[in-house]
Length: 394
Image (cartoon, rainbow, N blue to C red; front, top):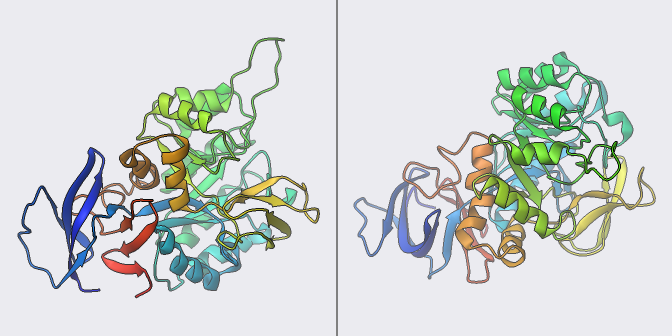
């Protein structure tokens, strides 16, 4: 793809609405946004006719374990393969999400991934889902560790030049000093896998854990102590706080759409994101796949992954087979959202969670030319990463 590109005859999906227009790209960044028949002021080497398609900011997935037969915990080759495949679903950036490996294995893995050569969707940060969480979920019980500041520092250093994100539980013993350390070192903390009460959650938020991942899933209410009085816990504390953001697996199974509607009412459309929590096997339809020492099964394309009888908790959820373009379509069909709002949830909002909103997630001059073109049915037609065509494969 030429360094200077004009995408014309598009419907630009802006925060304010949808407008007909064009986008001019120079050196991987948006140089000009043109609407209402405006003529571009610069020069370009190539023109692409969008044929009236919807042009959105590229999608950002904050939580992805695997795709097709590839699992991100396996190393650089699998990471490179996932990066190549994701643009077919409109993804231009993502957080490879890894499981804890005892004995320093996760530090070694992240160090290898941080120097991997990749093309396609960009790695924006590495996300370690644990080990500082109260419930193991789909992970083996030995994946839950102890509060270890040295391990945190080693993981953050291993990821450089990329930032780190950590999933942690407010009710994990000793977590608050860890959260403060993570924030001091530039990491982002996701609240997850918890039965914390309001006070524990508020302390974690105050320490710096201000995003909740796969919200509602494995967010248990505290035990009822006064019969008939509904206890409040992490969910209520997060929804009531003006600093928090959340993300959902919107596949129709992990969370009821009504619960997502409630979060939108409480938090507003700028503070709700969509993720896939995609597991190995996503995109391949029905089948069984190895996820670390566990085995997961997909009973339908795009449906949830469930642990099989060969795993620790048979039948339990273990991520999804959702893709980001399907998550966008689900937001429009299940939640009856307009396209600009749904697009925020897969682009600008996750970019803001990671502190990348100055350059990612927006159709704005100066932002990276990470773009996704959709047809009328919201299927992905073309994806650009920093102005280079990443799908269809060049």
